[in-house]
Figure 1 (tube, rainbow, N blue to C red):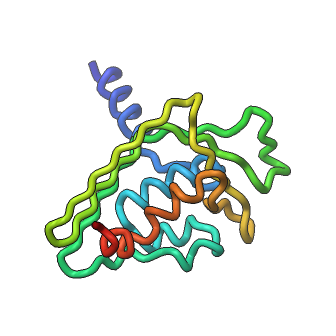
Figure 2: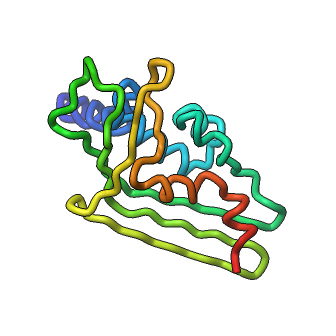
Length: 154
């Protein structure tokens, strides 16, 4: 019985482990985790400097924003950990947003299967993996400026 309890505890702790920020896949996962939490400082730390100017989670009075991501991540099989400095990370799953300002509420939900995954570029900036656009830059950019998103609801 004790062995079973210990096994369950180990598995539970492993499931709660933070993503590996020394990998492009882990950095991308942590980026979306922090984006969901609307943790502007942590998102900025995981974002390439080119996108910092787009970051604004300071919502106007009365505005609300809720983000929810249920995503999976994969890097190419030919990724060379020793030499790669840019990696296309496949991201698939469900992206949901609920934006509200005064009497206007907009809810969106987008789901992608693995064979139609978003491609998010991760690259090394000053020796650390950062998330920066790719073919899905609009996906990332629309969640970086939540203030503008809620102010422009119509």
